[in-house]
Image (cartoon, rainbow, N blue to C red; front, side):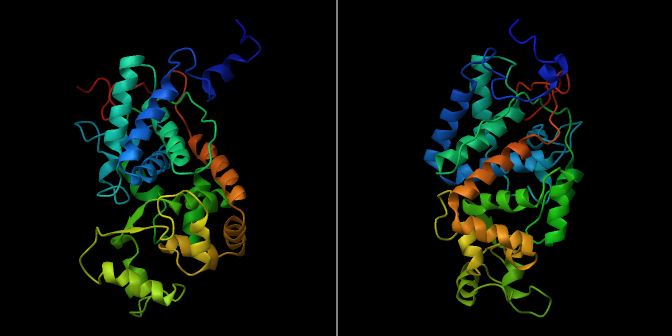
Amino acid sequence: MQLTFMPRELLEYSLFPQFYDHSCPKAKEIVKSIVAQAVAKETRMAASLVRLHFHDCFVKGCDASVLLDNSSSIVSEKGSNPNRNSLRGFEVVDQIKTALEAACPGTVSCADILALAARDSTVLVGGPSWDVPLGRRDSLGASIQGSNNDIPAPNNTLPTIITKFKRQGLDVVDVVALSGGHTIGMSRCTSFRQRLYNQTGNGMADSTLDVSFVSQLRQGCPRSGGDNNLFPLDFVTSTKFDNFYYKNILAGKGLLSSDEVLLTKSAKTAALVKAYAADVNLFFQHFAQSMVKMGNISPLTGSQGEIRKNCRRLNNNH
């Protein structure tokens, strides 16, 4: 009764942090404890879970479409160029889902699990916290085309990256702040090899890269082979969420082309890189705000979609 002052439409369709307070009061606690176990076992998992949420939201909105496996009716997004051999953390999500189904069957969506796990992961490795708006529902389909086309790629130009963000309702501040997620995690040789050997088609390394950094990277990322060799996105503090990502870019030691162009291709993004390098609190504040904004991309709410019992398949697909 106490909610009568809220318009019914709002109640039904907006996301809010207290969404499960009555229907599954332990939901946040359950997610947090399983994420904590996974990150304690392997710190890199924190970055993987943040990325999973990002790759979900940029395709059809934050609807857990990225978690669906191939089936007779679904071509999984897991096979797309940005995700194949690269996206990870699915088993952790399965574990969380199993625990939540035991506690409150059919209540907590896989999309909300991804949003909570991304926040908990960030906090566990030293990053900021934020209240996660909840109430998303799960998609009834996937889009491998969307996954191939809509997720920003490491070799995209800055205008392309900005356009891909803008299509999702995200602005230039969101581009630079969310790129800071690269303060943790690893990248494969195949994602930046062209910068080491042939950035502009003249057989030379990217001139914006620090020369000693180039020779260091070449040792583990040869001209051919070693595609899946892993490198820290932030080589100074790769397991800690901080602002060294931005300091590295200023030193010509941003790993991906999509990192470096933030400094070299636009005065507006360069100003933000410098601001975040100088002030970790500003970065944390903007990152948290941008994560909430990203989590609000076209969620399914009310009676749309479903609450999957198993995040990998639709409820009617056994």
